[in-house]
Picture 1 (cartoon, rainbow, N blue to C red):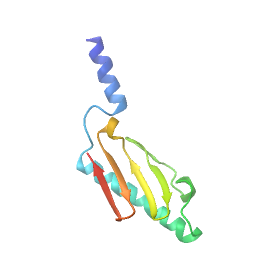
Picture 2: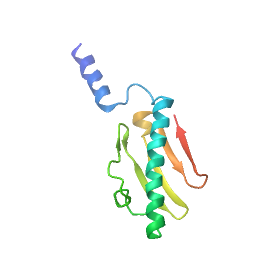
Picture 3: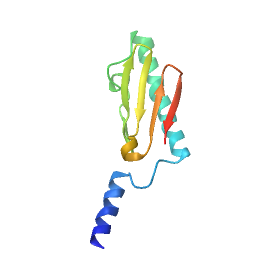
Length: 105
């Protein structure tokens, strides 16, 4: 019984035992990501280039239940993602070449 309690607690803390998030939660992450993208585009419009970090664009809270937003500026736009398939059973990312969000669940 003690072993089960420890495993259950570890699952709750890691957030990785119940499967990928619902479609509603994925849609909320996309909406949050769209807000971040808007700040990145506003920064680029003002400074001529994307910022080196999300914080430079005024994104102050990059944490989610599934880890922080990952950001990489590129020559064709920005790459933005969250989630870890190995841990959370999903990854969601912005694909600048196509201007859309992709989800792997």
